[in-house]
Image 1 (cartoon, rainbow, N blue to C red):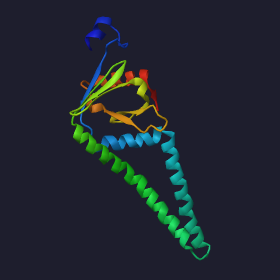
Image 2 (image 1 turned 60 degrees about the horizontal axis):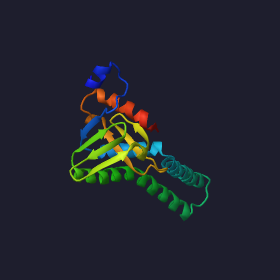
Image 3 (image 1 turned 135 degrees about the horizontal axis):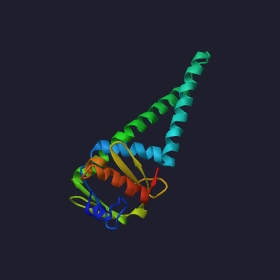
Image 4 (image 1 turned 180 degrees about the horizontal axis):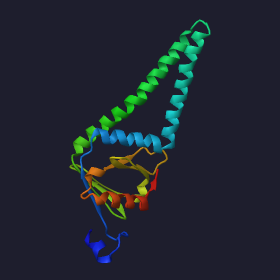
Length: 186
C-alpha cells in the first residue's frame, strides 16, 4: 500500500498518483496489439470481413463450377489465386508489422512509462513523448498487456503497455482503474 493510500485509508485515486512501468517491447507485443486493433477498430473489422466474404465466394465458386460439369474458366482460377494471396497478406501482415515495430523498439531501447491522471510520458534512449489522455480514444486489455489506441477513427496509432513492466503486481489493477477512468474500453 503506498503512503497516499495509507494516510487516507482509501483506495480511491489520489491526486498526484503515478504508475510507472519499465519494459522492453518485443515483436509478440506488437503482433498482439495489431490483432487487438483488428478487433477494436471498425475499419479494420470491415476489411477483414470483406476479404473473408470474397474468400468464401471464390472458394465456393470453383468447386460448384467443377462439380456442375462446366468447363473451368481462367478467370475463376485467377480469382481463387487472388483470394489465396489476399489471405496470405492478412496473415503475413501482422507478422511483418510486428517485426517492423520491433526494429523501432530495438533502436529506442528500454522504455520507462509514467502514467498519472493528466498524461502519459514515455521515455526511451532517444525519445521522450508526453501525451495527454485526450490523445487516446480507447484501450483493450489482453493477457499480456494494455493496448491504447489513438483517438482517430481508424485507430492507426497505438501504444503498448506490457503488464510485466509494472513495478508491483498490484499496479496492474491500479493501471486498469486509471485506464477505465480516462479511456473507453474497446
